[in-house]
Length: 224
Image: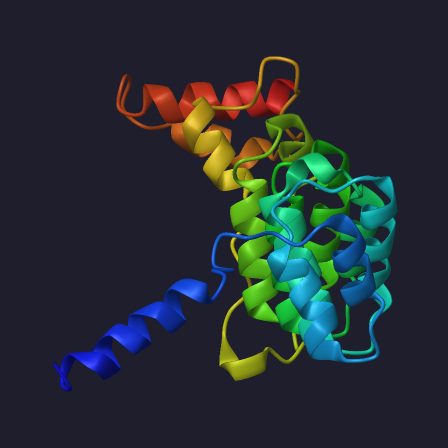
């Protein structure tokens, strides 16, 4: 009986301890955490939120976009990716310009299903100086609106621009769209390429029927 006493005492003490694993703090407590002087508590406010946020709580959490701690800004970007119904597109747009690359990558994931931010993503694909961020942007735009991506094809950075870690630029998402669509969207006109009659003339001198598809392609381009 003496051996069973400590175990029973331990079980009784555990049963009296409230379980907080599945407990979500009330909005007032989360607002207090979000306004705390401790960055750990400010980050906890974003991690403990289950997506149900009223206007006052959203305002307090949105203020984390200017938090001096990058881990708090990153937690906000991750929350905006998980809870897209919060809206706050202007906050995501601000985080896309964050000086911390981890925050920008999380913000790109938050902007993935926000059509209003596709022009911002296209612009950041041209100008962001970190290859992982550009890679994530290309992935996000690959699932976006074809017209927004195909009409504004992303340009690679200028030659001579130093790439971090020696990595190449992210591939433009227009290639992925064109492959999935089998060509340009019906409401989009393809680009007009500069045409020279010289290749057409050379192909025309070949044996009849040798390169019909190439000849037809050249003729189509020269008529645009």
